[in-house]
Amino acid sequence: MSSNNHSHHSADAHGHDHHGGHEASHGTFKSYMTGFVLSVILTAIPFWLVMGKVFADPVVTAALIMVFGAIQIIVHMIYFLHMNTKSEGGWNMMALIFTIVLVIIALSGSLWVMHHLNANMMVMSPEMMRNMP
Image (cartoon, rainbow, N blue to C red):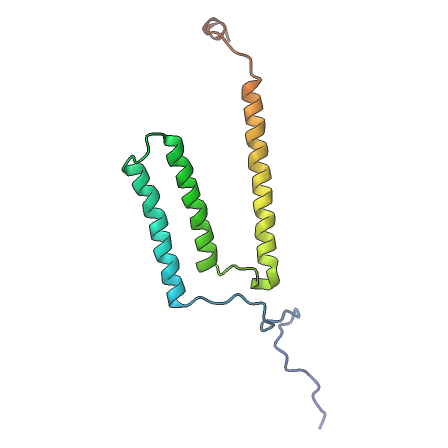
């Protein structure tokens, strides 16, 4: 009989280790319910702010809605996507940070360009607008 020297290590054909301790933990019923309740609250508060016309200034209302939206994104990432600094050896968090930096650069650059385009546009009088082709 020939001896079989194959290891019984749990890896697939590509050499990926599925039991190497880099897996994200799966949530419990309690954690899913906590995430659900927080999501409902973080949806209801902005709805109340808009429908109840709590603030006279719409800019304040819009800013608060964006803050609650950002908090809700974090709640979803933690409770439903199970993202933390330990999942996938920290690469998930690094990819998230890189994505956020790119989005901030793209948004701020776009806003900067649009602001300067608007500021540098020639002011047109009503008579100039009537004479346009």
